[in-house]
Amino acid sequence: MSDTPTDIDEAADLIVEGYERNAFFPIALQGRLSFDEALRLQIAVLNRRLERGDELAGWKIGLTSPSVRKRFGSDRQPFGYLLHQGLIPSGSEIDLDDIVVGAGIEPELCFVMGADLEGPGITPEQTRGAVAGVAPGMEINQRRDGGVLDFALSVADNLTQWAVVHGETIPLPAEFLSDDLVVRMERNGGLEASMVGRDVIDDHFSSIATLANILGEYGLALKSGQRLITGSFSKHDPARGDRWRASFDGIGSCEVAFRR
Image (cartoon, rainbow, N blue to C red; front, side, top):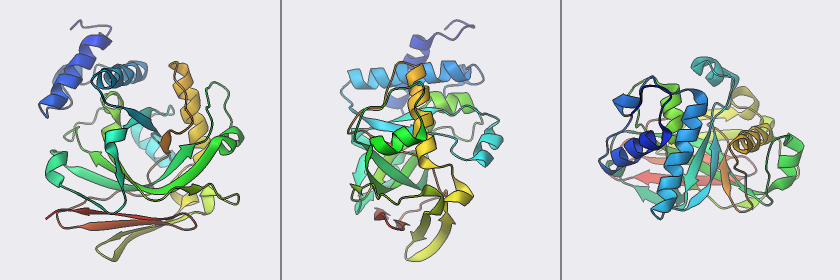
């Protein structure tokens, strides 16, 4: 692999081959990537996965609060992709051994697109009109970074995305205001966190507009039927035997269990 600039095709091969061996965050790429290179590399990895038979289900948007952007020192927000194999219905059971390297769980809304949106120039008002439905969700993250602090490589490696647990999709309520949304996260029947949207996360329609616009920079777009997750309300560490429940007032709830 050449020193500079990063060879995107070679880097994508390195990441994909590592997935097959449960070897993540290759040392050869650490500290090497710009933000733009990271997103181009993520797309190259996605294309290899699609060529091998995986199916694109939708997208995610990262750095969805001022505090997180400050922590990572970035005003630019990255996207990530969701695969159909990673869509898990509420009530399912997960084996932590399948995640291999450590897991995280985060309550997130899961929107469903009802129309295509292609940036640039997409506004929050346009995104509200293009969203057909919303479901309660939880993102399951695979901690592939192994504790290595490399934001760009995390972007290239799809922002630790592993799966999305989702409940029933309902039509987007006309009165929905993400700032007012109350979210609760329970573990084994006990309350772990309770949040109000405005305190912890950006407006979801602003986030979707940002997602559409940055995808547009790379020749991509949001498509009708795709699912979108729009950021974490809180972060938790699941353990064997846990049962987690995420509740979103006015939207619904979803559950997932982890085998003992």
